[in-house]
Each structure stands twice: as structure tokens, then as C-alpha cells.
Image (cartoon, helix red, strand yellow):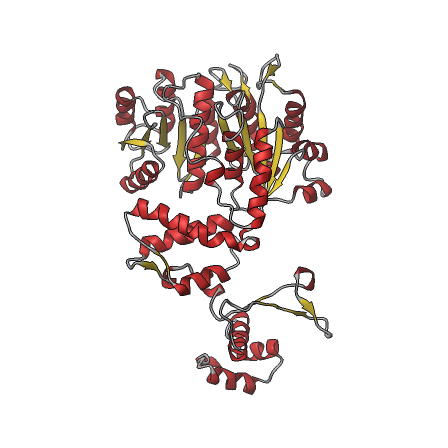
Length: 479
């Protein structure tokens, strides 16, 4: 099956280059246009499956190009891109039939998700599978999720059961960057619905005023500029799966309408008079604590219980450190292919720093860290000098994490919380611990020796002695 063709329309050469690199990495073929008129000519000749269209062009506007493309039927899926996301532009583009809107600077992970969603929705709306993405795509399934740790192994065993069941609603929760979208795709492509569309939408990325029409569609004349009927994502995903990312951002009104759809499996287009039956599995995801949101009256209790019939929680990376090094190997292999390099692995120091880091951004942060290092590294092994500052700092001499007793720290007689201690692989020494504490105090006190001494409960002279002992030069204004 030939790869989908993407047309990039932008007057900035660097933007076109970066988009081309990413699109080709994702397996698309690419054509480019630097102005609107050229885009219209290329669309007739190349018949692209998807268009990445800048709003501001040197000859005609992207909105005009969008309008003409839709009239000509040259592009089944169009994503608007601009550095100046004005609400009027968003409204005009969505009403004319654009699938979505992406702002600059471009988040490529988000863009990739939107492109996948646009292509899937295009297939669902047009019923044309000849140029559409294969539903049983390689690389999306159980084998695409690394599950070395016991927690992830247990999770994936549960995911297998969920994929094979007939549950119509599933809730995936976990911190940002844990891979909720990957689990959602795995459930879909390993289920009996795998030959039907997987349609994804980020509920926080579309203005509230447009979300209802995006989900349920609209009839011709439902509002100003609604020149033709447009099916919503529920209809596009009929028979398949609709992935609602960041479900906690939906407005109360849309939460109520969504609940009705989940209960009855019927939708009504904006401006429509009849109910339309749909068969859609809804997978919702959120990095918010929805139970807490329910208690605080920020999320409907009945909708939460309807979504959470099958609930999946993805543990953060810091709780499954056995997965870190296999993920590192996976990303090195990926970026070796992308950047045409031959990095063999990571240095011992890099391994120590990576394992010591807390990874608040989870797998996404790890992926970005390895990508950065692979871009800069010219030796055979990825060295620590190319790690982001936050990762390098966490695994240096700082062997402590500030915590509360409830989080695992011990409570002292004076009521203070003793920080959780980490002994690195291979051990350490009490002198190293003392060095680390002095360095941490100076960092927390922003270099002020008086305040650092108070944090350590020692005199300023004692602190100065330790700074000299560990060759930590005091700031000039402290001498």
C-alpha cells in the first residue's frame, strides 16, 4: 500500500524543511508549496491525502486556499498552521472544513497525533480506503509498548483483556508523558474494531464554541458560514474508536451531552432534528485526578462513573525504573535511523545520571532527552555533557529529594522532615553525602552562605570551612 501524501504549504523555507523531515520520518511522502496559487496547482496534479496549510501566505490567504481546496475536492484532510492563532481564523477554518488547527512553534508530537486523526477521520467520512492508512498498522500493538518492569507487565496483561472485551467506554489516567495515547491505540488496533477508524481529539486544543460541532457535526445552515453539512468525529469513528484526550477540559454542557451519547449511542448534529445511531468505543484520557475533580464539582460524577467502567492507570516512569534503560536503547535505535548515526549506547556516567533522575515528564521527557543527545553527540557513546541541565543536575552529587513524611520521608523530633536518601549503584561515602548536602544547601539558598548555613544548622564559619574543604569557591560578595 503506498504511503499517504502530505502537501506542506508555507512561505518559510525553514518551516517547510522541518515539517518535511518529520513527515518523512513518520512514513509520508511530501510535496511542498511556498504560496497559495502553487498549492492549488499542486493539489490538482498530486492529489494529496492531507494538507498542512499556513494561514498567512504571500499571495492569497490560507483560508482562501482551504475554501478552494474543499470546493474542488482536492484534499480530504486539511490542518491549518499559524503563528497567530486568532479565534476568527479558527472559526472560519473549521466551518470551511479544516480538520484542526495547530499553532507555531509546532509541537511535533501533537502534530503527528492530529495528522493521524485527520487521516482516520477522512477515511471514515469518505469511505475510501484505497488511499487511506492501513487500519492494522505495523508498529501499533502490544509489541510497541515496552513492558519490562512488573508494573508495566501487569498493566499490559490487563490491556490485553480490555482490548478483547466489548466495553464501550474506557478511562486511561496517568501523568503527562506516560503514553496514554499509545495505550489507547494499542487497545484499538488489538481489538475487533481494528479495521475501523481510530479518531483522536485533544479536548483542550479546540475552543469550547467549536467543540460541539467538531464532535457531533453540523447541518447546512446551522450557523453563519455553515455552507454544507459536516459529519462530526463520532460519525467518523463509527464502528471504531474515538479517543478523547484531556477529557477533564470539557465544559459542563458538553459533559452532559457526551453522557447522553455514551448511554444511548446516538448523536444529533448541531442544527439537526433527527438522532443518528452510532457504534463507537470511547476511550477517554486525563492527566488530572478526575475523582478529585468530581469532589470539587469540576467534573460530572455520572460521566466519570460511566467512563470509568474500565479504568486504566499508567504508572509514572519513576515508579518503573526497570523500563528506563530498555527505553533508552529503543530511542537510540530510532534516532540512529533518523539521524543516520551509529551511536552504540550510553556512557557509564550517562547511565548513572539517567537512572538517578526523577523524570517528572515521564517517557516523553526521556524521549526528548535522548533525541537532544543524539543530535549533538559525535562519539560512539552518548555522553553526559549532552544531557539537559535538569537531568544532569539530578544525578550529580545531589543524593537527596525533599519530601514530606507522608511521601516516605522520616519525621524528626523537631517536626521537620528528613529528606529521602538515595545510595547510587556502587555505593557512596559519608564524605560524599556531606558534600552533596552542602551543595544542595548552597543551591537552595541561591548561593547565600548565611542562609545555607541556617539550612544546615551550622555556623557560617563552619560552612566556609566545608566550602573550602570541598573546593567550592564562595561568591565574591560573600568573602
